[in-house]
Length: 64
Image 1 (tube, rainbow, N blue to C red):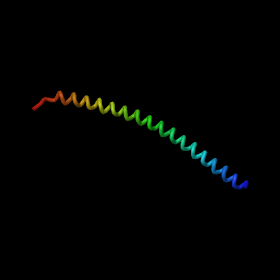
Image 2: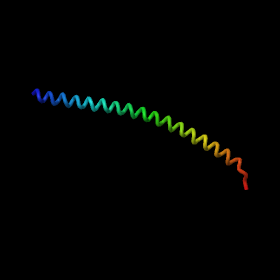
Image 3: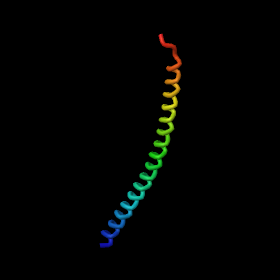
């Protein structure tokens, strides 16, 4: 019986360790998603600015 309890205790500790590792990974992934979303917004703004500048240049080109 002591052996069974020791095995059960070991498995419970393993499950707790996996749970904690999963929580840490989820936290890291949420932080990464937040950073990538911010980068995506920044790049989107750069693309919009570049598109506006290109449109302005195209309007200034003489027509044939």
